[in-house]
Image 1 (spheres, rainbow, N blue to C red):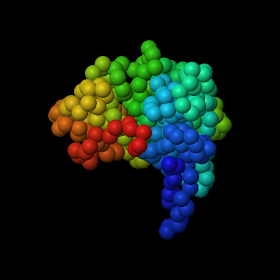
Image 2: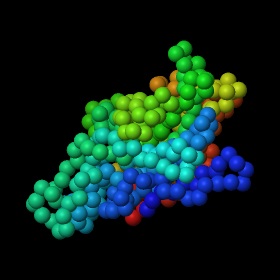
Image 3: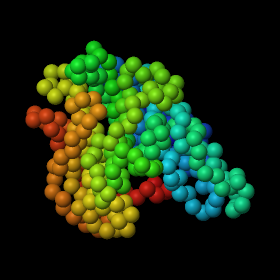
Amino acid sequence: MAVAALVLTAVAGAFNPDARVTVGNIGTPFPQNKQNEPAVAINPAVPNIVAAGANDEIDLEACNNRTDVTCPFTFGVGTSGIYFSNDSGTTWSQPTYTGLSARNCLGLVGTSPSPADNCDPSPGPIGTLPRYFENNLISDGDPAVGFGPLPGPGGSFSWANGWRLYYANITSSLGPSPLKGFEGVGVSRLDSTGYAAAQAGVNTAWHEPVIATKQNAALFSDHEMLAVDDASSSPFFGNVYVCNAAFRGTAEFIGKGNAAPEPIVVSSSSDGGDTWTTRQLSQSVTTARSVAGRTAPSTPTAEGGSTCSGTAPTRRRGRSRSS
């Protein structure tokens, strides 16, 4: 499945036709040609620049690697795809960075002891967020993207400084890392000064990912959304908010149909995403069997906080190959 975008132009009543966003894959094999859960943001300072994210399995091993009857997620390989458009969504690019990749692990038909059918991921080309592997982190998808002003040398925000792209995604650990616990919300950031290099596939054009959520060993963060206060007239101009469901239990516990408390929390940053403060917005209620919370985008409040709306019971989303 290719992710397509329909982006409105600045001309009233005009729009671009559907355009393929996930241009990095060649269409085969499965699951490297699979994407879902797209997110898109238009740069308010430079409206022709558009960024998108999706769960993108371009770098996972093919189903034929090892046993042909399973298509497992390849441990350690990221799935947070990133895409750019410089012409209001008419055409798109998907940079190739370097990270942990199983893109070349295509396997063989049937089961064989051959190394070609027993391939492990290794450093190589990736079409997802960079600098996770180097920090012992894994980008696990569920993208949320937004643009905001760039902080200046003194920390004050102004569009005159340039812009910053924020990309929030579910993040887990590959080894010892900044993440405490099972699954948290990581935030990647790209500044206007590094945009050309990021499009060219330079890993260091991006800031190192930061963990926005306050984590512990029994906390599974999920369903995150992101909002940036981009109104220069606002007293909280430049603040960034990430809202998510904070399941009090690991994915293995929840995935077996067990109920778990799932309060809604919001993490906010007033320094361009360097540091974050997390606070709980709702009670730690226990969900019904196979039910999970959903969060709508967080919106700034007059007090400088944010609200999460649209929470509703829904069937637990599994990470199945058929979705």
